[in-house]
Length: 341
Image (tube, rainbow, N blue to C red; front, side, top):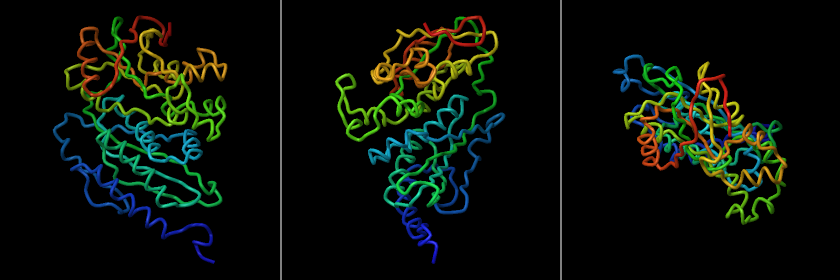
């Protein structure tokens, strides 16, 4: 008896690391110290010493049951983008610049090519966010995870000068809400998605006229990373007063998180186009409208609040970053919460 016969292939682990090195290398920043394969990742903060009060911000998250679709369709090249997005978008919401990322992959069997493909997606997400992939862990856990399944989670660290933290403290009635389009369902609500749609390859590979694409392709579309857009808004001289990443809990949970006491958000449903996948979900699952807005992003992945005079500059900066912005509502005095009308 040895470790391999017990289900853990150490040699496969070595091969996984070799295969993923080329992807990791593409994410390196000048602040990264040391090479790939050490016991920890090192990152110099020398570049940020001129900040008045340098403040670290962090985020951790996973991909959730969206992974089940990746298993069914045997497509693993974009799921890593989702993992990075869920972490770095939260950091960007605080005004932070993502610096580095670490991933954790736990699997029933270490298939080096599959692991390297997953990491290629993580690396792509890091490149989109401008952060370095400085470490991670691949844990082979036979008997705990099914043979061909895995879980994926990540952790990111960013930095911001304390005076530039986005807190919502300066919100006032009349501030305008600008939202950026999502790429679809992103990485939340998939436990409900999987109950609505028959999760069989023939269904997921089917093309639907209302979608203009295969259902599986639409559902697996990776989560948008908004780091560049938020940075360009700041560089345009706009003060982002508050910011909300529309994730699990949809509008009703996440929009109030960007508000302070005494401020109420109003969002107009007809101010932007809702992607057809959400109509298909609502119709097929007989899901009430409020439940849809309480579960999904409904086509908006990020919402910021800015002064009315800064709306045009905000929209222009977001467009220059490659995003599709919409003026979706406003802030008014009232009980902390959101009205969708």
